[in-house]
Amino acid sequence: MKESEIRPKELFQKYLELSGKDAESFDNSTFEKVNCIACDSSESKLKILKNGFDYQICTDCGTVFCSPRPTIKDLNNFYWNSKSAKFWFEEFLPKVEESRREKIFKKKALQLFSTIKEKGISISNLCDVGAGSGIFLEELKKIRDDISYYAIEPGQVSSKIIADKGFPVLQSSAETSSDWFDKFDFVVSLEVLEHVNKPLDFVLSMKNLLKRGGYCLITSLGYEGFDILTLGKDSNSISPPHHLNFPSVKGFELLFENAGFTDIQVTTPGILDVDIVLNSDKIPDFLEVLKSRGTVAINEFQEFLIKNKMSSHVWVLAKK
Image (cartoon, rainbow, N blue to C red):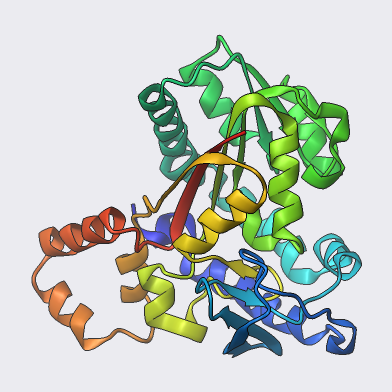
């Protein structure tokens, strides 16, 4: 898979431009200073300044996080009313939906069930938190239709789309989904954690949705990924105010420990780190040499990143 297949360059550049303009519209005098979002340490130092947003790095666990950051109220208002969010949902996603289904969601569905089989996890139901339009649930159901699938999705339009596809849906955020607490064998959330104001509250909510002994899988962005470390502030992943949280591998482990999870497994199965850097305007000499060695060398290096937990695409599997 190539980055351009899921994020067409011209379309994605338009989204980034709108995001930058939206970031400038925030009144940072209302921002709230926070401790490390993973380990709660108060010890951090400025790492990145981008579009008026400060990103600190925790000196204890290496997590990078936006602080001070917008309030929950301001973030909610941003996601409902900003030009970049509107562009993402109304123009970007519809144009890449089928490509993302084929390149992302089908593969993740297969990976998820492979993980469940390897761990010997028995499930009768599964909930997708932040389910969007329900594409991932559709792909999961194609593989196993003996499971009851549910969705939690705050968006009114998205919730209706999910319901029309036949899935039970709770129009809510994870943090306000108490009607479904202690209900599920397995809960999954794709690419949500990086957006939330209070990651610990979000992870606690995921745990509350589970039955005792149930499992949670979260995918998110990690700071120690090759593309983010290489590109720094020029990384498109560092996109305030959309992306606020970039835990380290240790940070992910501590965050889930602090939420009371056990059997925590952090992996980085991402496959786009090298391609993302090669598509940037900041290609280091090392990658120029790697590129000259051909596709096999590039693929082997990406496999090295995966094996050593150095991709920015992170999976966290944990047990309640």
